[in-house]
Every structure is written in structure tokens, then in C-alpha cells.
Length: 577
Image 1: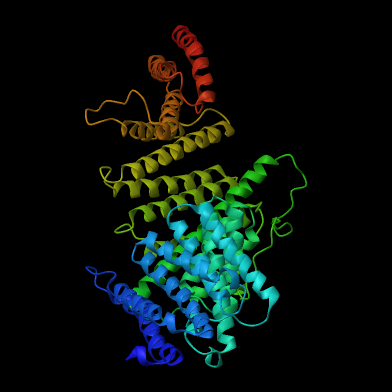
Image 2 (image 1 turned 180 degrees about the vertical axis):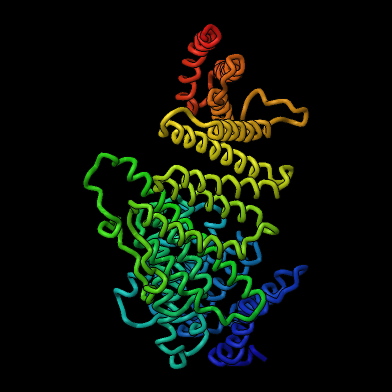
């Protein structure tokens, strides 16, 4: 029957309905395919594409010139649809062939309204294809080609290009101009999104951020976006701005992300609710990183400019960006609030940042609980510890500093107690090492406090210092012991990623043994002997591994000095009164 119809009638009454059916199968029905037949709808759609292709070939010998032109358009569209179909069904080689055929058939006319949008789509899909193959340079060529084609077309005409469905119908029944332009702009937004991803894979963070920002702005302008995904992408972009010290853009992105998710409170579906809660938690974690990095950079700035009398207050000197400051068409003032965008210099300013970070930590932990999200929960706890650590820098009272560090140690120990090292060995090591460092810091603070008071340290102070010394030794030793094998033997050679922390732990333990405050001479010498043995052991390891990376050179110099001096010191102590 179809063969008896005129080409024009066949195209609109037979071909177009089949096209619509295949598109529905690919875009809608495929989401309901069973797990045992994940590509069932795609295969059905493929059969329809091929059927249209076959009928078209049978008609070609009797076609007039104008009909042949329409046939080329349908062929190019079918090849594109088949290319996407094969790629989605994980048959990428055949998919690539179809896409290339589609592009070749319209190469000379890709700047015309009939074919420009199709050409942009083909180039985008080829970029996606090569990204999937991890050939990002080639993917970049296709994506940049799509971007250039879009720009060249807009510069040459104001006519909205055809959408693919228009290639199956008469010109007088085309999709309305406004809808066609919207579809073309949407496809270009996809191009920008792909470019952001490709540049990220190529480790070109600045270019990736630039295209991500452009994508987010276009999505807002066209109102074509999923609000939760938009918020997550915006929060992710904020993390790039942190790395370049642009806290103005970082804060704005996070405020925009927070505003966007605040508009999703009416989500009722269970899966959407879970998605929304996770999104909020992830944005809160990004806010925590903002607060943490701002405190860390403020601390570093103060340390590097201790003698600079021209350090200005945070309210006067926002950090300058070397690029366009992010600005979305959203009113986010309520979410930006009075959050600083510059270095903080006082404890009160630092505390303000700390409280904001603490608030978002609590929000993040409402979703990322220990039962089910171990890695995330621990990471959030470690961020909490670091917030206290950086806040303590701005506190001048030593006792209050000590209380902050004590909070850190308690939260890390409590978390470690709930983990089984058999399953979470790396995480347990991280917690143990950081706890050891905290106790070591507390030892230094208590020594400083003792030195500031008049007269010798009290028995209570001595007891506390010795207790902290032992706690730090225990934690460092527990970290080192975690590398023992099932026979309780230590490896003769440590892996590169664990070499430095293991050697540093032993180095700290050696120093800590000399920090015990004891009146008994033999006990002091015994502690020094333990330290000496550890220093010598570190030197022996270095001698046995001459090709060891230079990650421990400064400490090795101290070890050599200690090995020479400590025997003399021990002799002097024993000979003294």
C-alpha cells in the first residue's frame, strides 16, 4: 500500500508517524524496559528506522529531483537517529559509522536552515562518543566544531533552523519559528555542557569552569533545566572558584544553588525526595569547604604577613578574581547574607565563618549518617575537626585552644571506635594519624602554657603533659602498627603513598619520648634511649633505601644530629646530680 502513495503523501502519512513512534520508543518507552532486556525499546525503534530507510531506497529510482532532495534530508536524519540508537545500545562502532554518514551527506549544506541544527546534533553526539572512548582531544574537536557552527550560523541569518522532525514534512507545515529557535539554543546549551566536561577531563579547569558557568546561565535564561541538577552543578562550579581564591563567585554560586533547592520543597515522590535531600546535603558540604578554605587561607595570609602593618580588615578587601565574577539572574541576597568573601583577621570574624560551617555540617550529617554513608560521614567529621583547628589559630587563650583541640580528638576517636579496621583500614589510619597529631599539638600548647607561668610546672600540669605525650605516642604507634602483616611483621619497604606518614610518625614518637617530664634520671635516660633507637632506625631505613623519594630529607637531618648529640646528653644526665 505504501508503495502506491505519492512521495509527498508517503512522507507525511506513513514516514512521519513511524518517525514519531520510534522517537517515543527511544525517549519514553526505553525508561520502562526490564533489566533483562535493557534495550528492548531501542531495538524496536531501530527496526522502524531501518524500515523507513528501506522504503525510501525502494522509492528512489522513481523520484523527481525535488523528491530526491527531500530523500537526502530523510536519509541524513535516519542515519543520525540510527547512530544515536546504536550508541545508546552500546554498539558504538556502528553508531559512529551512521553519524559520519549523516554528516557527510549534509556537509555542503550544513550552514543552511534545513540542516544546521542536525549538523550541530551530529557533531555533539560524535563528541560524546569520543569522550566515552576517553579520546578527549578528538571529542574536543567535534564539540568545538559544533560551537563554531552555531556561532557562524547565527552570524549569517536570523532564520531559525529546522528541527529533525521538519525534515519529514512540507515547508508550509514546519514547526513554529520560536520553537525551532528554542530547540537550536537548547542544543547549543548541550554543546557548552559537553565542552565543560571535556575540558575537565583534559585537566583544563579554567576552561571547564568557563563553559560550566555559560551552561548554567543559558539554562536559567531558557528555563530548560532540572532544578536539582542545576543546583548541584552550580555548587560543583563553586569548588573551582575556591581553588583560584575567588570567594565572591564561590559564595554567589553556593547561594544560587541553595536558593534553587529551596524551591523544591513540594517534591512528594520518594525517589525525588531522596534526590532532593542528597542535593541539599551536598550543597551544605560545599558551604563547609567554603568556610574551611576561607579560614585556612586567612591563616596562611596572616602567617606570611606577620610583619606587614598594612593588613586590612576583611570588610575592606574582597579577594580579586582574574576572570569574570559569577553572577546569575537570581536574587540570592538572603542566602549570601553577611558571609565574608575576604580574609578574616580576628577571632570574632573567624568564629562567624566557623558557625556558618558548623551549621552546614549539621545539615549534611542529617543525610550522610554513619550507617550507610561511612566514607562521607567520616569526611564530614574530618572537616569538622579542621574547622576547629583553623578557628583555634585565631584564639589567643591557650586553655581555649586546648579545649578546641580536645573536641577534635574526641570526635575523631569516637568515629574510629565505630569502624571495623578490617573493612575500613585506610579510613581508620587517617583518623588515627590525625588524632596523634592533635595530641602532639596539645603537648606543645601545654608546654607553652607551663613556660608562661611563674615558677616550675605544677604536679597537675606535669601529669597532664605526660598523659598527652603518652596518648600521642599511642596513636602514632597504632598508625605505624596498622601496616604490620598477618604475622605482625613490619614491611621492609613501605609503599610510596604511605612512606612519608609512617616515617613522620616514627620521627614524632622519637621526639615525644623526650617530652616526658620525669625527675628520675634513669627514667629520663631510658626515654632518651627509646628516642635514640627510633632516630637510628629511621637512618637505617634511609641507608637501606638509597632510592627513597626526597620526602623525609629535613627530618633525616634532625635524626643525624640527634644520633650524634643524644649519647652525650645521656651520659651528662647520668653523671649529673
